[in-house]
Length: 114
Length: 112
Image (cartoon, rainbow over all chains, first blue to last red; front, side):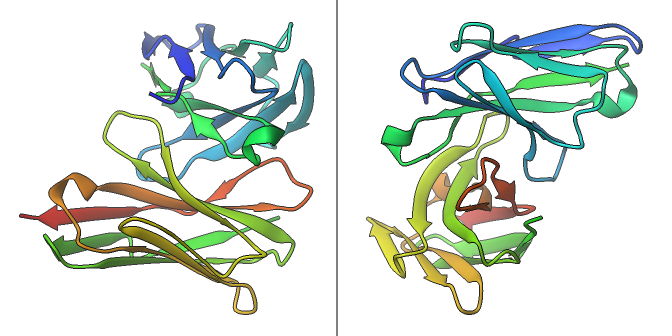
């Protein structure tokens, strides 16, 4: 257990529904990242927060995706109007400058869109 | 942007043998190279990392080497054990960047 938690661990939804995932980083970490991982591939960067500021977004993050970190602690990732292509593992990671920027991952949320 | 290539995609060894996984990166500005181990249904676990001011780093049975000139880095696992069986990912991050770019992974199987 790295100390990064994600909820839920699994989510099954129908196409067109909205889903929201939560990530709680290691408490002293000011940086939080979201990645997406499809079967047989490495994680792909989606977005990054430093404290509450969203500093970078990937081209993968279409306008159906939105992420927030309102108080610089936990973060949420929302997908609107889900599509079957959104089925993947959504991973959250956190880091701090004090840890040399090492990123520690949570267990992930497995999304299945039917 | 950065591109990381990893090989082999699958590797099968006998218990006690050594395993080597290799990665190449494209962006000469990259300066941080972590390795992650991912077991089925779990998130990636950081096992070792190296920065560009170091050529080699070792932690018990695991070592990583970095060749900045050739832009490649390798993971070495000695005295492999069945519990080393997992998917291993290399990654790279540039100096001023925030994102990690991952390789496609190596499925390591250690046969008892």
